[in-house]
Length: 159
Image (cartoon, rainbow, N blue to C red; front, side):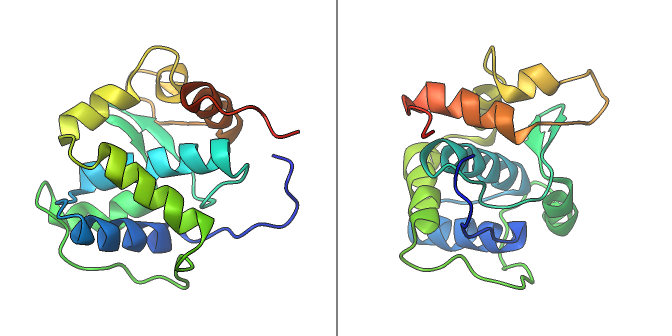
């Protein structure tokens, strides 16, 4: 990551942006889908913007990448669509590159089912697969996500 100054949002702000854009695109967002959308948005931002959207840790869980802090906030919805927003200290800047990345993720992946998103996150050579330790929740490194998503999206390293 070469940029020195860049916006980093709370994962709650990113989740709220996902929920707002999901509503606008008529996408029902469950906790499982929210986890995958946040993971893919983080990966796309690392590849295209050369910086993370949020600093909260992403871990490899059975059904793919999970942000434990966000999971705890959304678990009350179980497998039902999330109907409210989360308390967040900030907001993803409207019209920003970061908001655009989140919109691209939803436009590209929003019609997939939760299980299709899980399968996509489990691809061979994926950061989830590299971190998966059969039931032990392990951290997925940002550098690994950046390399993987640059390759998947055909983006050259910026530096």
